[in-house]
Image 1: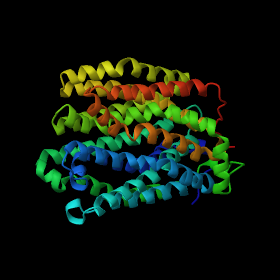
Image 2: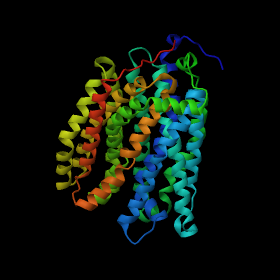
Image 3: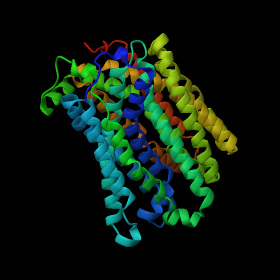
Image 4: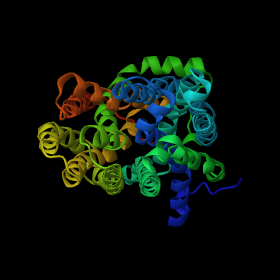
Length: 433
């Protein structure tokens, strides 16, 4: 495969094509995660039957969350692999593991047919998805950061998260169509498997798209690259401070993201008692809003710097999240739910558009993927991935349906502290020479 080493000679269409190809795998990863969250109530009945509907849903959400516990492991193992062999090859490997996890969950018979093997196999599939996702997001973010034009890194990297929003839109639109034309009984019996099968069907296309990627110049020109997993591990330990700070910065973005996307369908149906189609429509609109705010946030940070957004958005969430959800639960409606999540979407999109680019610049070049992925995965495992489960548990324990806002505010506080610490830590710019 030949390519020009003069990135400045690339046409805008070539750049757009490269961004789309690298982000396509991230789309599939997030699509699979969202589908599991969207159809948690049906999955609970199929694989986790108990005498209590709440208990079944919590078991399903726990399985959703446990996949995030594998992310830090995947971040270290696969992130180290990407930092050693290259961005392109590493992204193909993560896609392959992700595909196996998706196929496993899609074709597992339900509990009534194979008993305890059903939830165990689904759990294995979720663990594989989590292991892959641990390095997928970091690998995509680093790739986009390394191909970005000078002064445009925030805008470029924002499309990693933007691809997730396309997944939200696609999953929500598909769900809306299914629930419109299928009965509740049909959805519970087998209809929920259709979105999973769709995910499997697009795997070959994404392999083809990602297979045409080229290695980044920044990686090819990097003078010092780790030669072994042990060396990467030692460097990760030596750089524990920036990784810990990165984890704190990610806390707000991952919590707000999963609250307004994966948890919204469950919250809207079980707590607000809104119609499934209405909740899916809200989720789709939120995906559109995120798709708008993410590149806007990245572009703003390219103009005025990353730090203003890293402070302003978490503070705004702390001041407004609980009053907003309290207003929603007093008189639940489609309109109020839409307004509430759109406000939170603004905070998330602008913050994340700035933060992800910042994180690619913050990590040491030789372990950029592994360090970025580990920081992101730890935050997702501790905060974001368990947001649906924690929110459900908090509501059950307190009886306050607005209490998830407290969880979000806690994550915002953690990220503000991380931003303060980051100001005292040297950042390392990405170059291709």
